[in-house]
Image 1: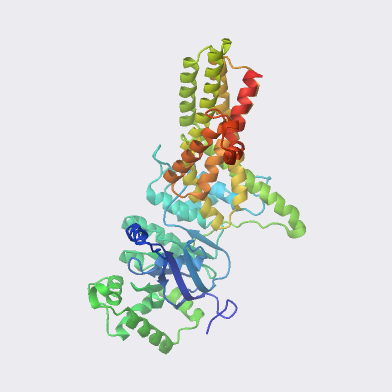
Image 2: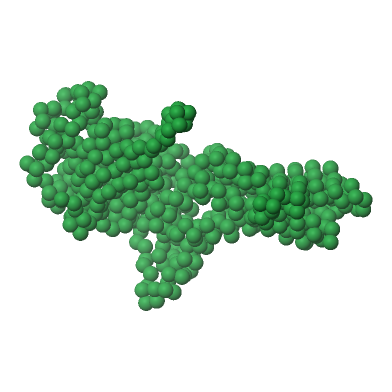
Length: 559
């Protein structure tokens, strides 16, 4: 019978169906087109119906071969399925949660100390640190970094990026996990937290997660591809999936051997147990027996009568050594509920200013956001200024035509160059998606903070362009010219941001921005007068913001 959230106990998840929509390959699509038929999109099963139990106070590992559905199961539990995935089922994991994706995305200019301080202010529900409340103590930060095993001499090192060397990949990963647990979520989801790291770094990461899970109300759920034997001993609970997306086992790790011995497949001596389990339940060693193992597990689970979560938790606590200390999260003060509406407004203002400070620092310390662009704009403005030097002092028709062409080109190309910030906006998109998913702030707050943070950079770029162009070409009304360029560049930044919000790959984003600007340029009215447009297309002249920038510059110059 179907279970509802109220009908299943805490720590249990039931999956009834999980499928993904898949399109036709390009070759098949072309062939279908040539034959005059359509290539219908199909569905691919990601997970078979299953029921899993995730006890509190433990770390649960989802293991299986590649394409067994580990990430699909983790995202279903976390409630963040991909857009083309449709799953039906019930998850009852009470309390707050936090999701850590496989790739590590952090802002380059923070150090571990300053990043933790920033996150503590960002997630503090009382506006701690910004409105005069006590800041996080340095000793608290040091103790927390000790638990993350980030050495003292690395705590004031920036995260780093392709422009500057900083923390190692393992240190970045541990820092990202530490930031995700600052709010003390009850359930922590980690997608392949040790993928691509050496055994020592992997052990450090898993020891921290193990320490964090040593709390009666916390659950840590991870996906693992190929853990070492040291990492494997840190796991409390295991969910084993077969290659065809079936549940083969769900329960305590130390009962896995009992299950396989019960089915006359014990682990051979001097053999890593997990590799043996994976080889047994999948096709590459023992034929297609996954459905048989699924039936065996259901039978074994019914006979074992393992429905009492408290007994499982007690077994885990008694089995695992207490050598790993508990990760202590400094307490977060709560909002006074006397005036909830006022508190909510102040909380929004607090988060907005924290994000604004972050992105202002990003503008200063990220070379690609301002410095490189400032050099490009300066060189281009100098080139145009020298090419059209002192041109506006002439009053003949050719000088007027050249001036109009210069205004058209400078407006179009200066706006077109905003596409250079898309790689950095794309990187920020992944950070924003992660933080919004974890409930740190609303996306509108982020968009507003980023938009406001662009103003200083746009002011600087517009000022440099005005200084050079007015000084060399002798344009009229420099203040008006500056304001027009300021608004035009700000609109260009907004266009780049809008594209980055809708396109994951920055290369595609650059193509989209280039295409949009390329379509807008002929519609400005310089190449073809709007009255000469085809009647059905005359409305298009009012669509580009380029039109208003160029017409304003023309009016400023020739009025």
